[in-house]
Length: 214
Image (spheres, helix red, strand yellow):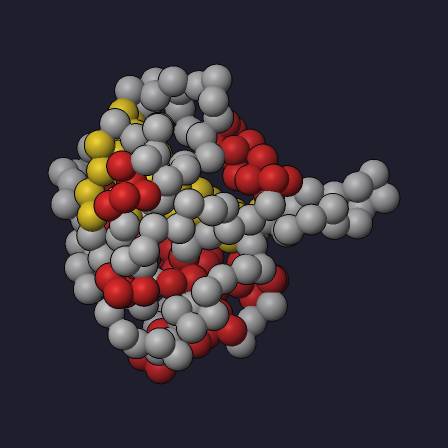
């Protein structure tokens, strides 16, 4: 992928183009990755999120996978299902918003110190706009941790996601941040749980991390 060339609009089409509010209307109090992959997400948050900081959980649900031993000043969730957000014990407040129809975030400049997008980046139809605005919202140097596995709701994942393997997904998410133009120190990580012999022990877990330029 050429970092200077935007992807065509067809790349972000989905098999199910009905309003996302309909698809996510019923709460799903389940986890979408297994325990090992969840632990890997928690480990990333432990590594990158500042204790006592203001955290933004984008595309949030009923669980945020934050390290249980770490306290944060504020954890704000933004998601599509009110019932799921209400049941999330780590959230201090929440916003119900569809980022595919309203990609601008309702937060002030530099109002958060870190953000996470967990197993959801594949559903954004305008990810570059969302990530560019997220760069505005984070304090300078604040990290975004974008994690994903090999699972998804296939009818709601964008077309380009289906054409790529795991390595391609890492490159694609890096491309999003590069296209947004206000992220630096972008790194791709493979945090998949593995045995001592190096074989996968469950769901894989990948992440792309970038820091807001400010």
